[in-house]
Length: 148
Image (cartoon, rainbow, N blue to C red; front, side, top):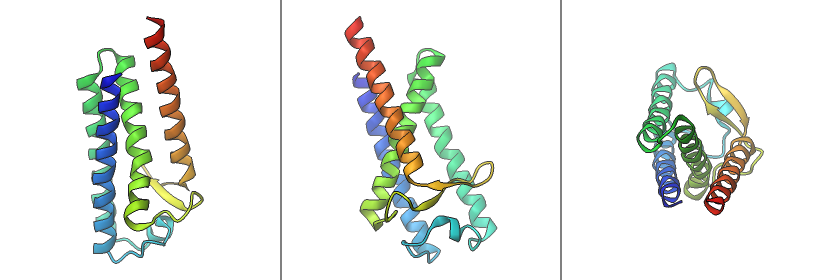
């Protein structure tokens, strides 16, 4: 269980770092915090979209690398990846809200990922999926701990 607490801490820290990066990017590009990212997608130069895609790839590679280093079996690696991803995703939105009060509500439309093409949805969707992932894995961990 300690391993999963540390993985959660890693995911939360990574989320905050990425949230801070996004705040700086928004400021550098002159983006008003209250605007939907969906609207902005058309206005951002393609060069910056490419740079953002490389950041997304780097994020996923960091999570995959962590899963490969920490997991013992393929199933364990998948659980580690999903657990850490869920904490990263959930706390990314929390970090943005704390830093710039964005998103303004759970119905705010966001560009979730750009790879392979833009994934657009209200922020409640990734927050809900991440929360459910954390709950399910926690139940599985507690069940396996108490059964052994």
